[in-house]
Image 1 (spheres, rainbow, N blue to C red):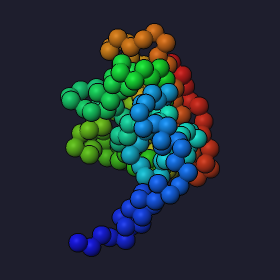
Image 2 (cartoon, rainbow, N blue to C red):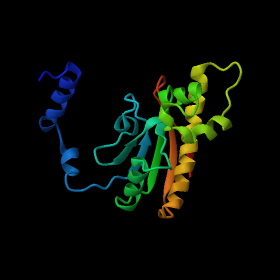
Image 3 (cartoon, rainbow, N blue to C red):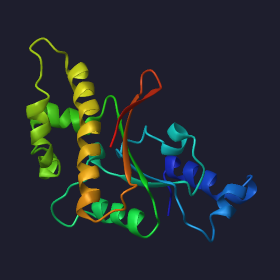
Image 4 (spheres, rainbow, N blue to C red):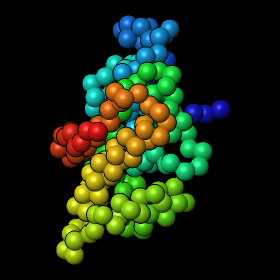
Amino acid sequence: MTIPDPVQDLLSTATSLAERDNAAWLATADVHKPKIALVTCCDARIQPDEVLGSQPGEVFTIRCLGNHVPFGGNGGERAALEYAIHHLGVRDIVVLGHAKCGAMGAVATQGADVLGGCLSELADLLNTVPREASEEDTVYIDRLARANVKFQAQRLFSLGIDIDAPDELRVHGLFIDLGKANVEHCCQH
């Protein structure tokens, strides 16, 4: 079986873990106690450990389209958050959104029912962040993505109440501008 070059390159890097300074990896072998649960987009440009400066084992990462955790249905994202809070003892949730978000672009240009309806809960967001008449697509998408961070952070704070999370649970919103490599703190609940 021939493995495509990009996959082969990744496998070469992955198999060389043992050859690198792997003290951080070894420290996590028997203990899983992350400090933060991170809800971020599936976008491959977002590398949580790079953005947060974290080490292996410090961040429990949940990736989903547009950093959106659906409340309806059997979504694994909600279950992952409940696991992080109740079983791992996480007390800080961070929602990390980003500029040039493809999911937000799809919602902005095609409506919240796009992508099989998995983002349909964002219809309210579209109503609260109307597009200005002369606004360029990229400007509106970034404005929508930034508002979505605040929207998701508020929803996840409400989820914490819904799942009987500890009183000390905090939810933070961060937004990264990919073009400027700038991270801003948007909100805290």
